Length: 213
Image (cartoon, rainbow, N blue to C red; front, side, top):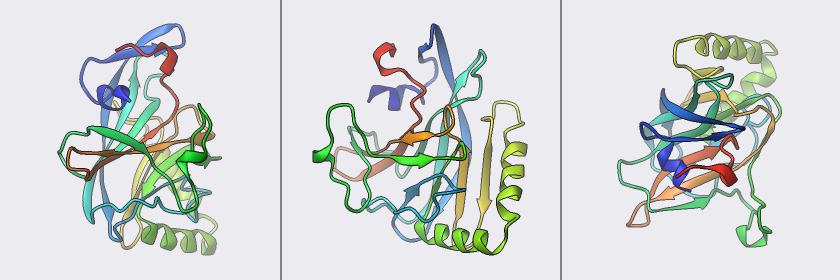
């Protein structure tokens, strides 16, 4: 799990295919949480998916993206992270939803959220419920979000797709999901006092077998 920290520190490099690449950090703004819960999902097809079972603080929290720096994959999102406090993370635990039991996983398996539209996001479940209703009643809403994401991804140092959209009680921060569609695991980081300090989604860009420490 060291990559979860190192990718957000200046100067770290790892393997991507046959090349050694670095990472740069994109400030994706703040995420407003109103319910004390959070979910990670594909915002275009997963707003109705369950939130994670772990409780998180209410308030506004910074979202950062670790992007591949250079080469043909420049701007690709490797990790997306919400920081709930400045406390250092001392352990990471896989994020789960209701009914998921980590003890049932075999070696190499993980729980995660499915992506079918090449996009990931962080959102409060109360906000997600509002967004889901709006998308159901406005067939053009998703396309407007796509347009905003493509525009947000055109800036210098930005990911290839990015938008921070105010929806109602909160907002949704959405971004390109690594290589695109897939099943992506999220992890809660805990501080030395056992309090949740961060949430991170790993988009499988870093090859753990070739990661450089």
